[in-house]
Length: 220
Image 1 (tube, rainbow, N blue to C red):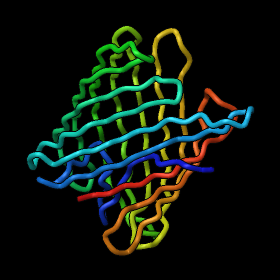
Image 2: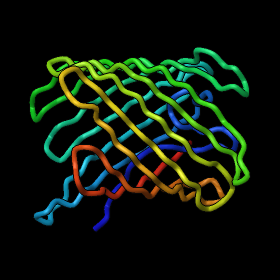
Image 3: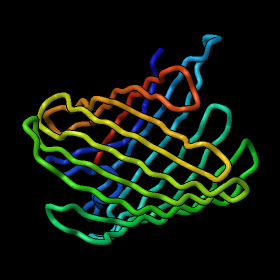
Image 4: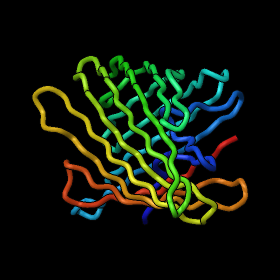
């Protein structure tokens, strides 16, 4: 009933492998499948699915794909490349990501471009290593609009079975009110090198109900 495969975040000991300021090591890969589900008043489910994959093509170049599809036949497909910008050691790091692809509404499709500047920093807490990521993006959807986005993600990475995670996403386009989405979650990771599950909730400004999310991450 609560079928959801969502979000992708992977933590590596002291530093997260969350896409953004961190790049993949050469020849290392990461995949995630996702679904976000809401229960409508009529008893049916509204959902969104996603598939994400990234690969360390070179030490300073990570490439990947990002697919998303909603129940009502809206979605996008994006190819991207991420490169480092600056590394300030304990003060954090910056990376830039360039993406190109298409977004669609039912059978009609148009070009889509995305430019992202990301900042990430690890820190120490009494409950284990933590990290925070801030992503600012300009998303150009031809035949639609230009979106300005700001996302913030923070979590803990320890050897515990459970670790907390919080995500806040915002988007703005001219002539519309600010869109926001909040996702408090818990990461469930086996002690050996196996897949990581994420179970959480989602609230956004477009709905009065709360969605359920489950995520599965895998690295190779």
